[in-house]
Length: 306
Image (cartoon, rainbow, N blue to C red; front, top):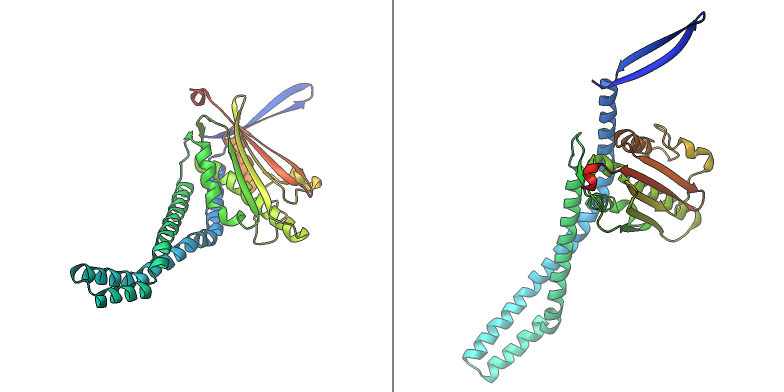
């Protein structure tokens, strides 16, 4: 049973008395887990429209390419039929029919365009498969037990899932140190932390673009081993966080976003997940008008090192 212990000291006369209170925190932990799960579902719901668009775009040009190939296929068959006739009975008339069939089928154009259509369709299907794999990986629950996690793969998955949030306002770059060890962590909760910070970064850049009529911004993610920790840095060049509220951003329900664009739970949950659940740390450095950098450190255990 999870317990919270509070010890206080008081005096009666000159005699010190120590008072110890034990609280069963099972219900509180359950409510916190439910809140995190609700926030994850909210995030997936907010991303759903963007993901649908991400899938619909390649689906559309795959459909267009298949329609094109189907349309020109009749002409190609006609050319093949006339070629067969010429091979069997070569006359001036059959040769003329073959030339007409080739001209009608626009064979030079078709033979140059079909490979392009097929390549584009293959790229589109691979894009769809990547999105579906990322969404499946992101939404899969890792349970409440820490497991060995490939941090590189986890971050790449989250960046893919959130693409619709950042692709119009920022370029995202990832820099991963070679030979990163696996990390014991709660994978889906770590993914949620990265998603929250990534989406916040995209919104900050969007606000800066709207305010200053500037070009696309940049979000940089880097992962490297520092001492006995894995350090994850997420930096953006958005509008930054005002200095007077920087010490409040991890408070529950604190938000500067307009209604409907944020609940104020994201960074509070991030702090809870990283600090309280993983014994790690999360820090922010921000300069108003220039951008914000979050640095997360996850401790490596002896199991990680081996």
